[in-house]
Image (cartoon, rainbow, N blue to C red):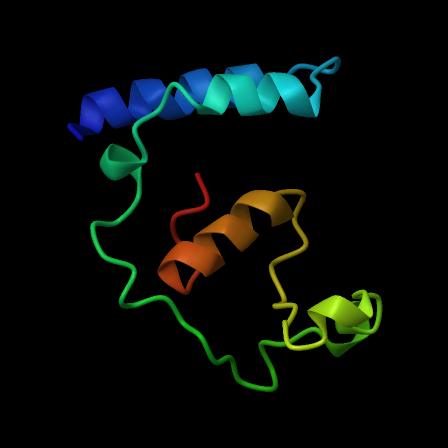
Length: 99
């Protein structure tokens, strides 16, 4: 994806998500228009499957239902962008791509 196109796409997504009256259904409908191959990395071989003790949020893991006992919660920066920080952590292993 070209940088100019990526910037325009990210701004359009931000403007859409910035609405106060948005519903989950609208988010899903909006998201299907994007080709994830152009947004996400070509390979997920580098996704971190194991996290250090300092990266894990043990208090949050206490809130997980039993069926998710094998899952972990990872700490993200609590700066109001935790959703985007978390998405960047999941995909890239760091918060550098939270935009």
